[in-house]
Structure formats: structure tokens, C-alpha cells
Length: 355
Image 1 (tube, rainbow, N blue to C red):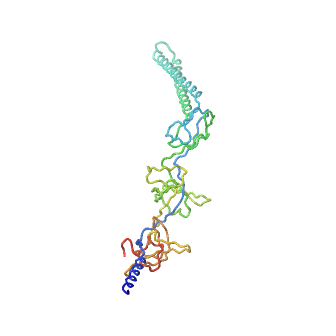
Image 2 (cartoon, helix red, strand yellow):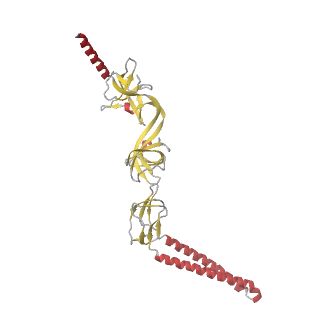
Image 3 (tube, rainbow, N blue to C red):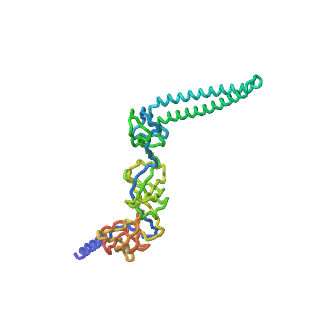
């Protein structure tokens, strides 16, 4: 009877001991370069945006596009009624042909007079008059050709063409409307080589440098991040918000991004502080409502590893790691999984095999 009782007590003790060894995963505390990670929000912007208008006044006779249409460089977007301008161009071209004929005839008569003048008694004064006529006809032809080119350019300006590839974002005219130069008829927005603009607090102006790495994420593309770099820093602060503009470009300009100008974008700027320090995985950090920040440190000096709670003071957080200003040393091992319910001095079993 006593042996049976002892056996049952031994099983109970062994079970209690096994239960007390909570399974945990640990990671070493290490020194690494400290990065100041700045989280910002911004907007997807286009490198080109233009409000288009015609160079001449006229009646809208043809409208080839609508809002949302994608167009290529040089594509005709809108045509004005050019009938009168076309007739004026034909008249100017006819005057050019007339001038060419007149010049050709003047040159012929001048050449003949100069060749036979001395033999047939043609006066020198008459020859000089013919020379002047040739010169005058040459000038008249130059003027006629310039007038024809001018009229041809006017006819061409009755067609509004796309200055660059993009999407029509706004249309402010209809067929049959009379438009004047400077009227905002269409808005064209480029959708290639998009940029990401962020407003960053003035306190970070001195630490952000061109080519600084930035990780971009989009509200419209959950779960996807795009490696990017700072392209331009515009050192003009917004007086009200005390911010300045940081423009970011994706490292891969050909990356297929289903985003458009105006969408929201989030960025994490990685700023190298130029120093190194003690860091730990952010999974090891426990934060409490009273402001305490602690980690569980492994003590493997005994037969079984045990944990001790350690209060720490933190610095920058970056790339899944947190700088520990005080409370830990390089080479310590901390619990990163299973640390939610631990107790001071509790024995643990380390799942990665370290004891």
C-alpha cells in the first residue's frame, strides 16, 4: 500500500515539474548598427500633370477622348473647325506659286537683257531696273512663303495633341462649344514613373540624405512593400505644419504597381545614426500599462534554465529590432516566444535546443 502511494506521489511530482518547464524560444542579444526608422505617410504623385488648351480660338468640331482614356504622345485629342483657316492657307500657298512664277519670269528677262544689252542697244538703266525687279520678286516670294508657313501653323494649331503619354483625368468642353486660347479644356496626367511624396517633420531635416533607403507600402496593395530610395529633398518648409517635402522613387522603375496618382502611401525611412549598440528582437519586448518595459532573460547556470525578468530602457526600433539603451548586455539570451505568462525564476525548456 505504501509503495503504491509513493509511486503515485512520484508521478505527480514529475508531472508538476514537467508542467513547470514552459516551452520557449530564445534569441541572443547582439550589437549592430543603430538605424533611426521614421514612419511617414504621403501621396502617390505624377511626374507630369498638364492642363491643356488650344493656341487659337474656334469651335470644337471633334472630341476624340473622354475622361479615363489613355493617350500616347502626339495623339490628337481635340480638333477645332479649321475650314476658314484652311482656305486662308490655300490662298497663301497660291500666292507662293504666283510669286515663284513672277520671280522666274523676272530672272529670265534680266538674264536676256544683260546678255544682249550691248549689242541691241538696251540701256544700262533698263538692265538695272530688271535687276531690281528680280530682287523685289525674291523678297516678295520670301514673304509669301513665310505667310504660307504661318497659315499652315495656324491650321495645325486647330488640333490639340497630347504633349506626353498619360490618362485624361478631366474634360471641360463639349462638341460645338466656342473656346479661346488659355481655356482649360483637358487635364492630362502621366501614370508612368510615379513618385511618392512625403511631408516630414522639420526635426528630421538634418538627418535625411539623398539615396537613403525607404520601404514603401500602399493601402491599396495590402501585404506588398516596394524598396525605394530618397530622390529629392525640397528644403522649403510648410509654415503651418513645420514640414518639408521628401520625394521618393522606387528602386525598380519597371515594377508593376497598380497604383495611380492621388493614392495614399506609407513609408519607413531608414536613417543610419552612425553608431552601434545593443539590440534585441522586438518580440522579446513586453510593455505594461504602468509604463514598464521588460524582457525575460535566460539563466542557464543551474541544472535547468530559468528566466528572470529584466527592466529595460529602449531607443530606436528598426527592421524588427529594438535598441536597448540599458538593462541588457551583448551575449545575453532573451525569450522571444512563450514569454507572455512566465513567472520570475520559472524553469523553461528551450525549443531551439539551447540549454
